[in-house]
Amino acid sequence: MDGRGDVAARLSAALAEIEDQFLWNPEASLATAIRIEDEALALDDEPLLFRARLAQANMLMRNGDVAAAARRIWQIHQWATDNGDNVVLARTHLVWAAIHRHLGDAAQCLEHSVLAVELLDDQATPHMQVWHRAKLADALGLAGSMEAARQRYAQTEELAIDKRVGFFVNHDLALYEVPVHADIPHQDVVFLDETDPQSSPMKAKGVAELGICGVAAAVANAIYNATGVRVRDYPITLDKLLDGLPAAV
Image 1 (cartoon, one colour):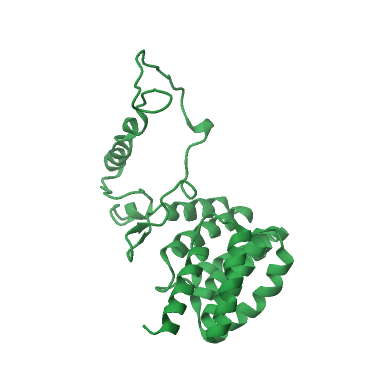
Image 2 (image 1 turned 90 degrees about the horizontal axis):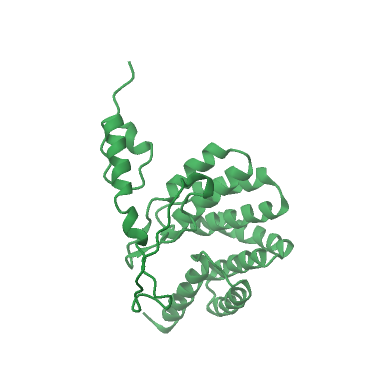
């Protein structure tokens, strides 16, 4: 790869770090995106240039400057449409959806969220595959379609793996449905008399995750007993049962 190609690859990787992250430092990411825009201009690299501008619009929106983000998004959308860049186009609609969410327009937020998912293709990153669907679920909930939102959230529970580096994209609780207080039955907490000075600064022992290792298998067995369908991968969702159920008579 020549010097120009090396610079472009470095800038693309830096942009990917901004684009595919769950938590942002808007000020720092905005400064990085502005620097990348300047370098992309020097390279005369339009795809990098508009990706950098889109990253700037996203960070402006996340920093509360919705008007500045909205002013930038039109030109980026037009370039992506003219050049058939579905990745930039999908990301553009996702930022647009967030802008409308900030403005309280649930209908437009949902419309752009749907487009952001429909435009996903083989070029979309694993992060996009998960994040865009999660944001669609958010938009459905905002629009009052709670059942559809729950179905979309369930889709995001599937582990998404970036096969280029063997990385689990959604390896946190940000997109995972966890029980709330009302879902939990009464629990007895038992403290052991002895301490463990090696375990932690508190010197406390904890069973923690060991106690729930068998729960998922027990649920899978209960579903098998009720339906006759054995599901061998998680999460267990309705679509994995339908093909194994007997036909309606």
